Structure formats: structure tokens, C-alpha cells
Length: 330
Ligand code: TYM
Image 1 (tube, helix red, strand yellow):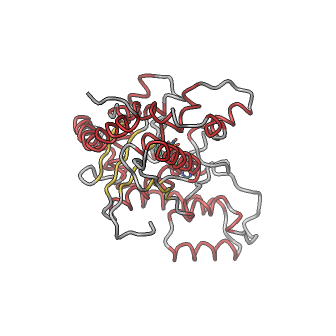
Image 2: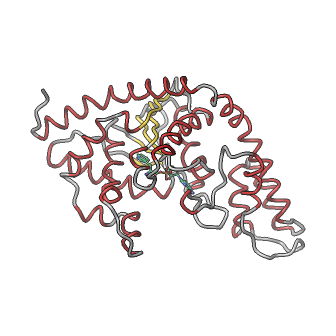
Image 3: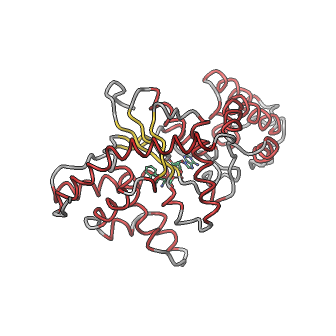
């Protein structure tokens, strides 16, 4: 963050539409934790309304919402320091979304990638996917957030949020805080096992809490070229190095860069190193996650408290917005 001395309001969310993976960790959760440690006022939620745009299995959505909350805690989001909640436990979000849709130009949403890509592929879309960015804007604006830590793929959504806040403020007065995205360059896009962006929908993920053997298989499935063991390799063109360096200290990066460029380094050795570094980082979190399996009431309590805290900001914010727009607050 640019000005770490000023206490800011931070918000971000993850869709509970699949199991968390390295892209979610390095692109988002790592920054969530950093911002808690810097002493900011943090709000982290599970975007279950957003997940409904792709997941239509009620039992699975319920289960994933609960288990992703446990994942958050196991990864180090301390519920004593940050509000952790489920999007749908903040009913004010949907109300704010409607109010914001009335100042959102169609063209702004027509340019958004998820919707545009679907239409370009000749697939039919639905209103949920079209309105998705307005709901995301409501998530952010409702807690008066200054800063939103996300991966690169979410940059456009933060820009849309800024635009919508601007349209609203020009029409009704400077009520909404215009937020900034926080996207550190080094982790903006984590590549998946097939070289595309790591994503639940591409089935190319390395998961955070899958059984050890599955994680090993996922890591060993990272695509490589056919260079021989002897050949020197360019780390900057290597997918394996792109994943490996996420786990490395500066010294370890220098060591591996040297090993890549000197020749004599086989891809199996690098994959084993990624696996070992993965375990070094995640094993304590995976152990904590196993403990949380037997504490569903604790997770529910954390989510209740988190929603309560967020609603303390959300209720008066929505009341102010309603009043500014000419909707009575009785
Ligand atoms: P979602 O659930 O797709 O992803 C959650 C977070 O993980 C980041 N991420 C990645 N970062 C780097 N490399 C990758 N391969 C990678 N894959 C995922 C995402 O950028 C994101 O930060 N629309 C959001 C959820 C959302 C939200 C919000 C976020 C709803 N409301 C309000 C912030 C604020 C989404 O689909 O994220």
C-alpha cells in the first residue's frame, strides 16, 4: 500500500464456487493478511450471490460457503482482527445494488469481460452475469472501502465500481467513497498448470487444501517444454519458474535462477522443489484447516459476528443513500 501509516477500510471477497487454489492465495489472500497486519480495518467475505451466476447446486453452494470460511481462517485471516462474513448475510448489499443500477449506464456493463466474452462465444447470458459488476460495486461501496486487494482479473470490476461511485456522487452529492485497487505486480496473475491463468473454471488449479497426493499430481501436471536435462533454460520463459518463485525468498530465487541458466536442471527436480516449498508454506495452514473441520459452530459464530460488524457500516450507509435519492427511511 502506498500510505501504510493511515488506517484504511479494506474489503474483498472470493466466490465460494470451487476449492481455493494458489491463484486465490497469492493473488488475493496473501494481501488480505498483509493488510490486516498493517492494522487496517478489514472486511473479507464469501461472495455467494456472485457464485450463483455459475453454480446451481444448492447443497454444494452451502457446503462451499461454509468450507471456504474455514479456509479463510486456516489461511490466517484472524476473525478477531478482520470481519469475515457471507455476502448474503448483509441484505443491504442487494438493496444498494438496485439503487446503483439506476445510475449505471448499460454501455459500462456491456464492456465488462465476463459478459462480453460469453456473448462473443455466441452463448446466451443472463441478467445475473450482466449485473454482476454492479453487485460487486455494492459489496465494496457498502462498507465505504478505500482499498480493494484483488488479482489482475478483477481490475476492470474495481474500475467499474469507481465509475459507478462517480456517477452517483455527481448526481446525488459526494456520499460514496471512491476505492482504489491494490494489485501487487509480482502476483497479479498466477499461471495454472496448463499455462493459462489459474482458474477454477479452467480445471488447471493447484489447490490449497486437497489431499497431499492430489496436490502432488497437480504440481507434477504443470506443462513443460521438451528441453533436455543438459540445456540451460530461461527462467523468465518457464512456467515452472513462474510458480516456483511465488514460494521463494530473494536468495532462493537467485539460487534457482542460477540453476536454470547453468544447465543440468531437470523439470522433475523443479516440480519436487515446488511441492516441498508448497508444503513448507501450507502444511501449518492445512493442519489448522483439519482442526476446523470439527468446529462448525465456531465458524458460524465467526460469520455471525462478521456480518454484524459489517452491517454497522452498511445500514447507515444505505439509509444515507436512500435519503439522498428521495426514498423515505421509516
Ligand atoms: P474470484 O472468486 O474469481 O477470485 C478471488 C480472488 O482471487 C484472485 N485470483 C487470482 N489472482 C491471481 N492469479 C490468479 N490466477 C487468480 N485467480 C483468482 C481474484 O483476482 C480475486 O481477487 N468477482 C470476484 C469476487 C468478488 C469481489 C467483490 C472481489 C465479489 N465481490 C468485491 C473484491 C471486492 C471474483 O470472482 O473473484
